[in-house]
Length: 129
Image (cartoon, rainbow, N blue to C red; front, side):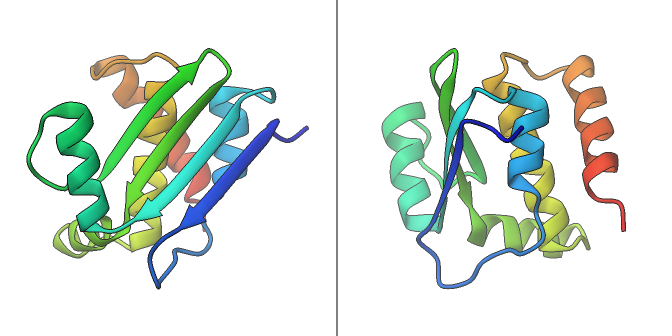
């Protein structure tokens, strides 16, 4: 069963292929969760981070729970590409990690050892070759 709805909107000219957004969202958030995903660049992310978090920089990902059954994830593809290059990772791998991270936040997890263990588990599961 797939999630109630996973909508992805790209505002960048490039895209990341091969990230199993639907499968990750279904497993972490459940089949009834309605998720909106926006993939953007630095300018929009900087504005959103300043407006909602009072942070004056473009972050890599934001997650906004709207209710117990719906939320939004915003991924900054430009920042993710730079981080992937600095970490010698594929952009697909970094995007997958940050999407997992955001889904776990929407599920109610806070940063810490438990969240890190879950990130490692899901990342290993969804980045197998």
